[in-house]
Length: 333
Ligand SMILES: NC(=O)c1ccc[n+]([C@@H]2O[C@H](COP(=O)([O-])OP(=O)(O)OC[C@H]3O[C@@H](n4cnc5c(N)ncnc54)[C@H](O)[C@@H]3O)[C@@H](O)[C@H]2O)c1
Image (cartoon, rainbow, N blue to C red; front, side, top):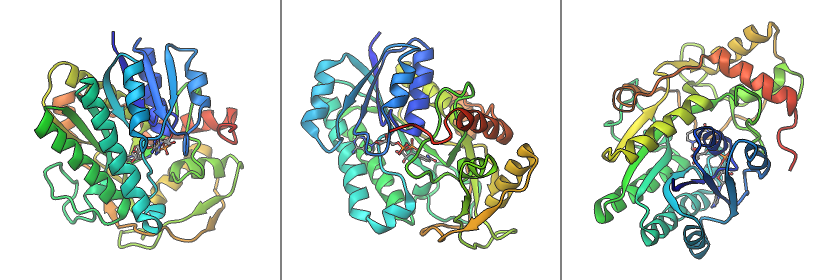
């Protein structure tokens, strides 16, 4: 069976998707420049199956081509990217270059190697702020920050290659990702983590003080409402998307989420409930580029791909507890 190339496989989501593919008996090649991700999960995952790592930057077109020449790759799952809204507001050009040019370089290498299936990690940030909730895939895109714009532009490049060269793609637009591997094997180790639930769990475990970074917005409790998806549910969705393309499915865009928003305050309350304690929090500088509420209608992914949300918020919180208990400081690098 041909190998699957996972770009960004040293990162949070890519490593969890790699784990699932290895458990399914599929050989994985990770392409990552390790600017934000780690080599350690790849070493850990090598206990499950065949996983090889290529330290290449997506801004190095020749390097990407070498990866395709070396490995017999059948499909690509594309996670590599920069993904901090806050940072993108400060460095918009860097986001455009990394996320859009990097995607184009990848597609050109795929074209040269005659690999035409790609599953792409996009984001709900492409929609921007909308009054119509839950958001559906046909809704107009209107990114409100350079991160969202870079991901929408990357989607457009993929769509262009679909039209020009017959590439088939699944684009997943998703929301806030939470949780860790339920066996505690791998987890989130961002430098620094931007994820609310991860940070609240670390606060509850006394690993570091929980910093409250949300801005005051117009919602019932004044904190932003977002859709949350567990990283293992997300990995399943990517496996379904991959299978859909393998079976000749037509190119399409799917939202992933649980269809219900939770406010920041509700997430913190759920972490407190699971741990049976109050979490001390420190008010930090509010993030830039935030809007009030965003959650998705994921019924298209349910009907066409058979996607299901199997994990509850408390499942995600408990998986993080297990991960941080074994790795309080995350990965060692
Ligand atoms: N985490 C979320 O909540 C979330 C939500 C929606 C969409 N996404 C998307 O999912 C993808 C993965 O997110 P994540 O949370 O795992 O992020 P992450 O930062 O943990 O992983 C991204 C990986 O990409 C690598 N990378 C970045 N630029 C690269 C380049 N030029 N060349 C090679 N490798 C490069 C990094 O080193 C890192 O390992 C991103 O594309 C992001 O836009 C994430």
